[in-house]
Image 1 (cartoon, rainbow, N blue to C red):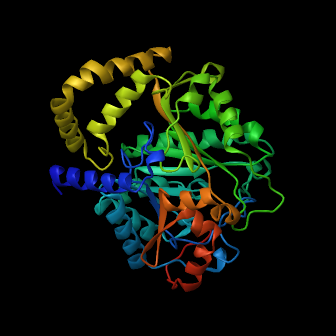
Image 2: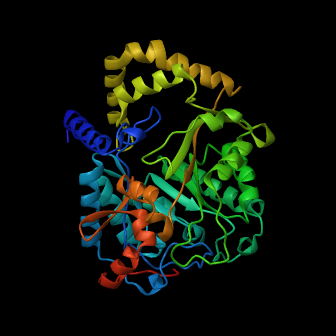
Length: 428
């Protein structure tokens, strides 16, 4: 696909997403319809999981469900591509996809990229610890460039001392092991790999959030994002676990950054009750880590740069480009938008960079994503959230909101109808 055609298709997809947003949600820091259409996810890729986490959104029958065959999963990806447009974000997820036959995981990743999606493999990460070299093979043979690893104290299934971790700080050694695994995979393959981590937050581990934030900011060379997800009472989540409010979670996140500016640097993707994120620059080590948001919503000058930047570059993505293609894209952008870049964007970024007090700050994104339980989905706000959901799953040809999949029985209905396949590797 030519660059001009891809650009037109991206703009059309963004315009469609923006038109579906209520006027009240078209805020200066709204990224849906401005830079992203949303995010998609597969279902049926591997319902089974070899963990038994206390907060699990899978249904009771997930481990008995058979994975969907590759042709059906590829059809899901095509449906998501039609919605998301070029370089759309798609999560290769379900239970634990890394338990599926390695060749099929590689084929799924390769196919997603071939049709113009950017696949992120979602995993607990344990398979990569047990099978050295697997991550590198997914990168070199499948073209995997994005990975997300879930690590927190609600998880049950690791086979070493981390199985008994009581505090989030007890898992910092595991996080460091994953960080080194990421660095080593990049060194061995010479390829790009961007990695995020997800964390389920309950009343029991809320106090550990500031420490988690500090750890990730200190290791921003390995990870580019951490997404905190307040517990929702869906699936097979244990009933004695208590969730937390979004505002109290963000108070802990801001505490971890040590920078009150973070509280005013947030953006949203869709409904503000669904997600919140702060993009910024991280620098330093240990107790000296600093995080500075790229913009503040209470500063008109910051919002003007953001608005014009999204007007000019919204939807642009280098993530599927080869080095030559990326260089050509950057050159076109510089020629077309050089005045804005030199006069406004660059001075703004220099000011942000100066506040990090570092010669080499790194990009990082702090996120919270808030799933609903069944009771929340039927409230007026819950209905609004479902209508503008930015995170969808194709089920029987319909792009369903993830909260409906998790909380309203759609996942279980899909599993009951999913056909079986032969090539499955469980516990390998």
